[in-house]
Length: 233
Image (tube, rainbow, N blue to C red; front, side, top):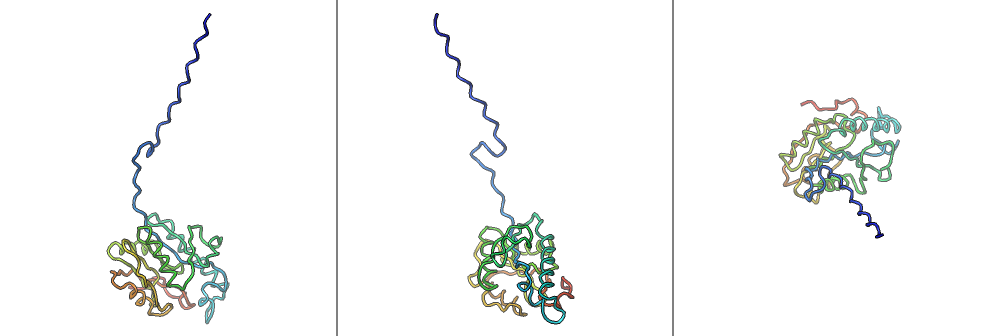
C-alpha cells in the first residue's frame, strides 16, 4: 500500500480590514496648529511671589499674597484653559517648580534664565516656531477671560503683533503671528513696573503692524485690589 498523501498546507489567515486612515500610502493631512496661549506664573510660595502686594499699607503679608495669587491665577486658568480654540501652556518659575502640585494640571515649560524681557522674548520665539500665532500673558489678570483672548487672536489676523494695555501704563498680554521671526531686540530695555512699559515694548516692535487689545488691570500693589478688573471705555 502506498503512503497517504501529505496534508494540505494551512490556509493563511485573512488579513483584518484596514482601519479608517490606514492601509494606504496617503495619510490624512493634519490641520493647522491651534494658536498657543502661554501663561507666565511663579510657584505661589510666601515671600517669593507678589512681594509688592504683601507689603505696605493694606498689604496682605507674604502668606496672604501667596494665597491670593494661587487662587486668582487658578480662577483665570479655569476660564481660559478649556477653550478648544487655543492650546494653553504654563511657563513656570523657578524652573525647579515644574512638578509643583500647587499649580494647575496643565502642560508646563520652564521660563529659564534672564530678566523679565529676556524670558518673555524667548517664550514668544519658541511659541512662534510652531508656525501658529502665540500669545503671552501673566496669571495675575483677574479680568482676563475667553472674550479677551479671542479678541487678541482676531487682532493678529489683521496685524503682525498685539499688545493689550494694562491700566498702570504697562501691558498684560503680547502676541505675535507667523511668518517671520521675533525682533532680535524684543522687549530689550523696557522699563518694567513703570508707566512707560507699553511704549517701550512697542518701540522694540518697530516695523511691525501692532494692534491693541482690551485694557485690563493687573494686581501688583494693595491699592490694585480695589480697582475694577476691566477698565471703563
